[in-house]
Length: 506
Ligand SMILES: Cc1cc2nc3c(=O)[nH]c(=O)nc-3n(C[C@H](O)[C@H](O)[C@H](O)COP(=O)(O)OP(=O)(O)OC[C@H]3O[C@@H](n4cnc5c(N)ncnc54)[C@H](O)[C@@H]3O)c2cc1C
Image (cartoon, rainbow, N blue to C red; front, side):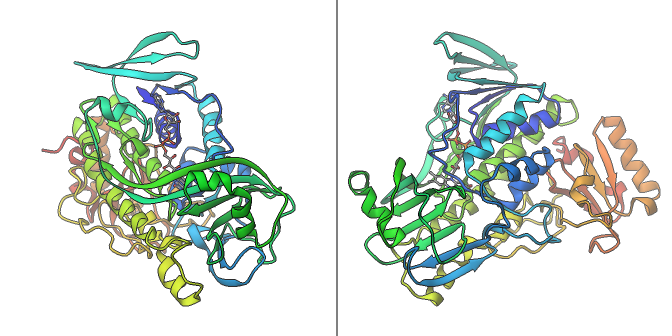
């Protein structure tokens, strides 16, 4: 397996492959991550659940400069020194309470910190060969795989033969072009200007918040702490690079509400883009993450969607490599992810309609316009792979229409509804690395024995798990995939079609 690109998508794909003992080489040009270009800060509940499966959720929280307990709030104000307009509490899935609906709360943490934790994790995995300073130059598909040309850190080109290639090389990578796929979509005409700066004396009487939206005034924008020792980030919508570079101090003063001593660490201009590739795969090459789609950061889904892609494709490749998954599994990657990505891009595009320079200083208007941006559990947890060729046919095909509210569902295609067990552990911790049959196993009788026997004959790893007595679907049998989505729902487990769920149906 070869993974081109070691950003969030590539590192997540390698972590998922490593969990399943599948060897992979990760090619990544950057020797070091850049803390001065933090990009994503919102790690969603769903991504945290994946990090938990890989055993690194605790490490990410320990490394995160802003603990969840420090703040779960987004504040709208006239400036850091000015009037509070309104707040959104428990934004982005941030909570210190245990919630029945999920195994992990969200976490605000700069993307480079997550990347560093994942790099460290991968270095401890014998199956992973992380090659920093190397770059993919070209690829050629041959009968049994892909031949990839790589340049090493010293400038020498070499070739690697791989059975599969994951193109995790981002929007400016080369894999998309090499398989003749093209982005389809549009860009927002307005520029954006990001600044990262040190200002240890900058404080606010508004209290802790993970984002402060400053409305009105000379330069509306967003600002937040990167750490608790005086490093800040800011985004100025509508500010072009020349103006931003020439007026950085005035821009910071506008958000702070008064001049403040500061040192600019980095400035980054960027444009919001709503792009989805016309194809996500060609034979043994798959586009994963931003190489397949780009969406604006509003709502904080970009990096999380990339991790979702990586998990989806990596467990399927592992299953095929291990001999218990059929090629139909690989063919289901694009149909399963395209719908989720379209929903996510549409949601981010709608958040784009009300940026800091568009919003009035009016509490009710802000609450109406921004609610879906900060409370998007319907999108984060409620998406479904119903309708996929490897999901039980005939149910769960309707995509979630309410992006805000998550209603747990045991329909095939949905993420398994979470539950806490009496001993305090999560139902998700009882799921195996392969498929899991969740249901009244003890009372299961011959149906459970039959499905176990079929799995044994096909060498499909199948774990059994009993949900707690309070679980609403306690009396049903749910076949759960390695990515925690339900492949099949039955009152008699003997009715479960393991062939279809592992890609061999039809
Ligand atoms: C200002 C901003 C704020 C954001 N905020 C959020 C947020 O709050 N939440 C969120 O979820 N997302 C956010 N995002 C989006 C997030 O940063 C991206 O979605 C994410 O980085 C994409 O991950 P990726 O691994 O697909 O691509 P990338 O992060 O672009 O990684 C691609 C990797 O491939 C490597 N590469 C490139 N070319 C080659 C090659 N030829 N060979 C090998 N490797 C190559 C690159 O070095 C890079 O490491 C934000 C983005 C921006 C710009």
